[in-house]
Length: 197
Image (cartoon, rainbow, N blue to C red; front, side, top):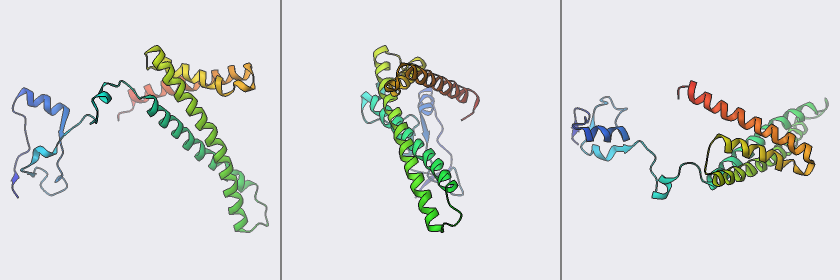
């Protein structure tokens, strides 16, 4: 097998533009000679931007409603299930009687964590589902997929979630949802600005 002794270098301005959107993947970097490249080096000239199957996907500016639905609902359900299971495990350990065997204690912890995890996971999953639908609807209606759409969707989600408890509870839940979304957006912007990733 033949190897090149020097890495590929661009020779013109069009090659410079090509280098900005592509990076050279070297499968032999872990070998002693990092500059060793096979003859077929152009096979490993991979794009640095995401590859899409359909041209319609490249025209999208943000997530589709299906992406949002899966992401928000799934993330909220898993986070709620994990938090509820942890809280239920702690409650199960606290409620254990001094004379119980290890088998009974484990059974109590598993039952308590499963029940609490299921309850909180379902509640947060429903919140994620409502939020995803409202954010997609608001973004489509206004034509703006930004901070205001997110905060408006969070306010609406809180109000819809607690609507059965009365207008006062719905207003309080909406305000809590709006504050939570506002803090999340500000935190995301701060992370983007001050944390080098």
